[in-house]
Length: 224
Image 1 (tube, rainbow, N blue to C red):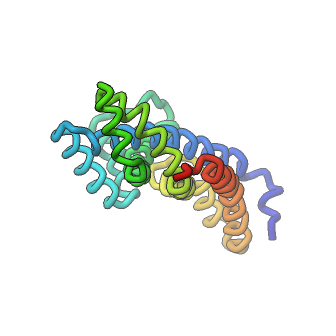
Image 2: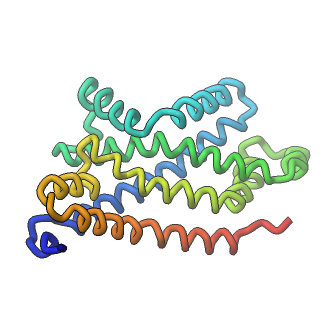
């Protein structure tokens, strides 16, 4: 049943390595972008608040496939933006990272905003009474506690991000989902085995993330 694994025709480890890099780069970018978005959403500047709110509500409710295809059609094919990539696979990978960051950052933003809501308002007021600016209050008082309170929802977002990388195959990123599509076409008599292999691969990618961040959530839980 699993004879196709011994043929050497498919670079299974290479495909999952691309998926792992796609998830890692997108996770880092999403945490940065999501933090920027939540800073806008709680900003005292109306324009920044309006932009953050509109961006989150629009992008979060847009299907990820539409976001990724929009990156391909809008940035690459219309504006000829390659993000420094030469081959089509490299361009697809970088556009996929960009699209995943733009999409997942909205969920990171909402997870952090829920964490901010757990911080007693009196702490921010006390910090402002000491003469601290909004940026200082946010970075030194509010966000550190918000991250601690939001570890569990952030873990769910990052696990979902790893599974969402499968959509990147739609724009030519040579990840595990792209290889799975090829194997399904070529190995019609072993479809169950193909699905089992890729299901196991994604479990290997996502399970450690859930366990590590679950442990971190218990260690970093804010005692009220």
